[in-house]
Length: 398
Image 1 (spheres, rainbow, N blue to C red):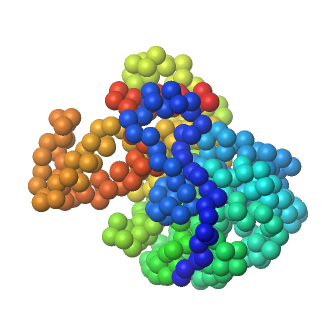
Image 2 (cartoon, helix red, strand yellow):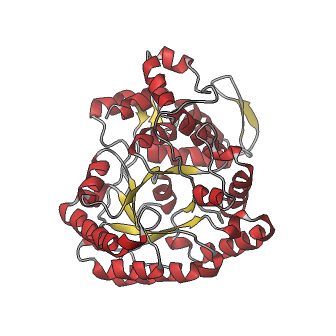
Image 3 (cartoon, rainbow, N blue to C red):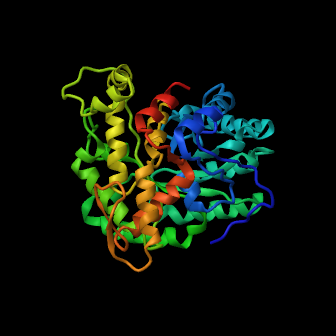
């Protein structure tokens, strides 16, 4: 399926644009690239980064979104689903349309991708029909509780809406239902989803994982001392989602990390696994204590496990999580040089990394290297000696 592409771009997306130029020079060996809505969809999918969900019934919705964009958020979802009570759904939809129109008129939406998470298919049509100038602000839709049985109706509606509006609208299905979490039918469902999403590849920006709903199917709510990968039944489903839908052979999609839902102090049962040494070296021990007290050490651990399991970015429901997601997305200088060394070897073989701590194998590491270089284009490469502590403290101070 194809969607119309406008003649002019209304988006100009660049991570860390909110940092001062001298701060960027200090932190980065290579700056992130500036993207437009016409950029490679794989880069746009990676640029989602910390995708912030905002309840669409906020009175100050347009102002709140504009503020977060000015703070460096490159992807925002106006939420009409779980964040909104049934009694407020219609008013929230009108509020979302008004906010998109306002953001388009003021130009505030140019530096971020904006999506709406709908409750029903009817929401999609009402939003597109209600927009005046807001179509320029809208990047697409998020579809909760997406299944192979109902999915094609939503995907076709997005493609048709894009044609009517004269612009490409992307969609992001959320996998969070029993069809995916229940083991007996999972392979059948994921096979059907794989075939369906492939038919609409041009408008599927990324696939999101709704871990909270998947946990809820079994009456589970993961504790803040644990990551989602400690919840075996959900970790198993995530592994299979990546297996079917995240393949690196050209048939896969970007799979985004699930939400981390904690952000306040609590009494800890387990000792933090966030090492003290990196913070001592940067004279940031108090900052580490702040991270631990706000449960952000758990988020950092889950982010690392997300990447290790083939996921990118994160669904975010609290602004304090954004800096952590983006700091860990920056490519280290060591990663970048290892990746470029691997890509330079066209005849195969193996050789030691210039950092003398690992072996780089040209063929098995090639796809990894391509992914690293792609991430470097979106989030940049850290300068020599700059660690995630430097990046995190700089971002958290904004």
